[in-house]
Amino acid sequence: MQNDKHPSYGPVVFRDRSAGYAFLTRSTASSEQTIDWDDGKSYPVIDVEISAESHPFYTGKARVVDSEGQVAKFERRYGEDGGADAS
Image (cartoon, rainbow, N blue to C red; front, side):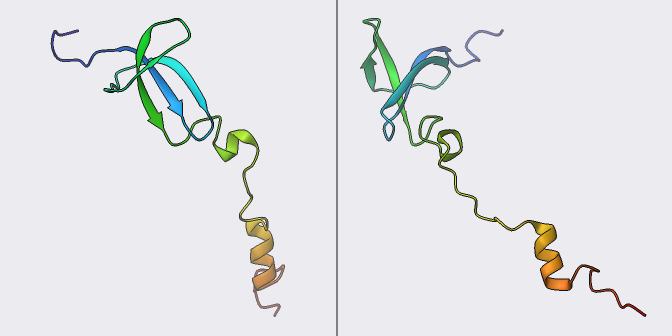
């Protein structure tokens, strides 16, 4: 790696405020805010709006918007033969 060309890579806490969930990982992201972690050290913290703890897909609260399949929708509009003339 070339010197002074790459961002610093270190421990960062990502915090999902809506779920009350935080995890420590390594990242090139940085922040002026810090948080005291369980190990007694202080780490930069980045607040995120959504994480795996609050995302509807991962929590099982996802809604199915299109419950009717595309084939059933086509058959309802054009009939089972696809609108072809039966000549």
